[in-house]
Length: 529
Image (cartoon, rainbow, N blue to C red; front, side):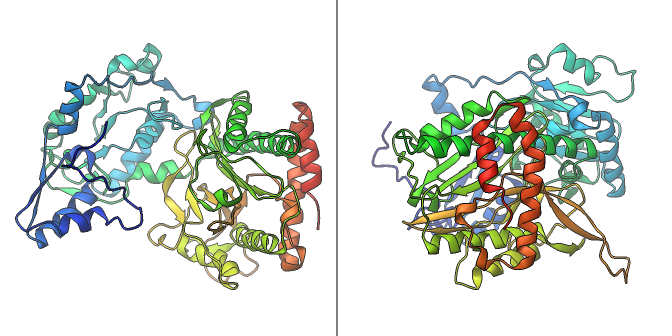
């Protein structure tokens, strides 16, 4: 469908396109701007309201959504939602009742009588449930409320199999904690009654404004305890995630070895290779889905940070150009996210320098030792210095949190110049992914998953707690792109130890699955320098 002359289409983020708030502020004074409050967060609503009021305009909630009315008149089919399934404690490590107990303890400490949950990964984590309503994310559409006496889940009960109803004690209120189910669409009509006599109503700035409007203004507005607890993986979760990472590493070694062989003998496009990788992953133990759409690019496309190959725009892979592969899987025992940059021909000296400097930044994070109060912005600076020294940099964060068979991006922990609000906790899992992107030429990114572990310094002169990262993505660095002369002795020692660990952990898995291409790739790249 084409837009008529009454509409102007503007894509946010494109050159020359103003930010939405700037465009709204530029409208004539006296304008009334309407929006669906269920589609805007409390934080954004407050920001927009303040800025629009200053410029003589008013932000108003609009219900029902005009677009929904048009779609209904056009006969748009309602989306089909997935069946929800239980997530076994062999992976989660804690029952949902144990998690609720922890959350209520945090609520007591904050004098909160009601916790409002709208983030899908938080709801899935709390109840040990999963679904597939969102591509690449094993979550389901729902809302949840937790008080000290009751637990409410807002979801179509038909989506819950009997086994899930039993696990949640839906029909057994005499057996400890139980969950009360309400229809998904009834959250707003029920929230007012449930919250009317509650104090310390705990919400996030990302809570939909439509929910905020139903409650008395007695809010605690800060990162909620589910966000924090979900990010601190327990021992069971960490062991599972490490196993998933090993499975993924073996897959990628075999895929990269296969890729090196076929691109010299058969024209292979970016999309061909991407689909081939997904097909190979789909055969692995415990796999549910890819954790995001694979970014597989060659040459100048590698410089496009969020590039996605399609059948229409896909370039043919070339052994004489950089190949970047950013990929991951959502396994029952963990979510993975890893990037390696490859070159199967003869890279230029400048390409090797750029790769090695990105590697130095990667190693800086991998070997960082820091006090527990350190922020992600401080770690970010440790890494970027290796690029800044020669005039290089990149426009994305170095690390984001990673879920446990959930979203590949989660908070609150991160590593970036903007990471100033949250400290690291033992059990956090993050990415470590510095890069360099030269428009029209090539791009490089090296990404591994890391977990936060304790560090015991040589000198203990205070009661400060120290931490460090453990790298758990064991895919070797690409030997063909490393300029040894640019590495310090400490960096070489880390790289050698890392490669020895790759060989030790991956060889049995590659042999078990008869991944001959993977064994060759491992032997050629997991070398000591």
